Length: 309
Image (cartoon, helix red, strand yellow):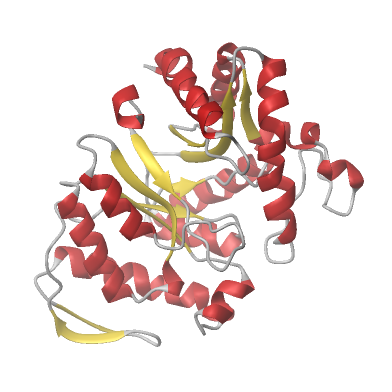
């Protein structure tokens, strides 16, 4: 349906060991999606690199890029939930250094006939990874909000994905820091992807009535539980300890919600303040009936997307 409606990409989010069954296997799912589509790009946003082996990821991503005929965008992140690192028996404090080695290995594996790498966590000698991807290399995005992650994304020259955990003022700070690092490392990027919860209905009041609850299941529920690993505040800077944090209005600017006209105006704010070029819309929200989610997806395509060419 997304392809028929003219969406540019479909994005998948990875997390593990959750009661709601969030997708733990992005590349398997993406292969199934790629086999059923022809034009839409398949994006992971984000694939949690340290929880996987880099050679296996290089091979699986290359196979997926071939299945999709060059339609893969590999959005990656370092992961942060302690439960995930414990489940894979990996030290959480090693995630940053692992990312540095990982990114170098992926580029070498995809672009060179053979390569040798010697690092603290990963090593290989005269290794040939096949098949090669259609795209040399596969384009990557980077999800981060901490100082080290922003610096790592800029140093690698990868577009930064803005999270739906953060309100606009936070994102302005993150992108400002990231762009300073880009300048420092002499890199430039042309894409500014931004993840937002999204729900479109015939009127603002109807959209809030139907969409606020499912959005809060993510913003106050899921992220509220993970706050010890990733600090989160509402649009007014309040933490989950404040009762007001659990009111939808305190998170509204993290969302695309309302009538088509209102959502167009909200997207324009992201363009103006953040320079956003890609909006990743989380539309299949927890508890959202599928018919309402599909109606929102159709309305967004019909009445919002034409305003942006």
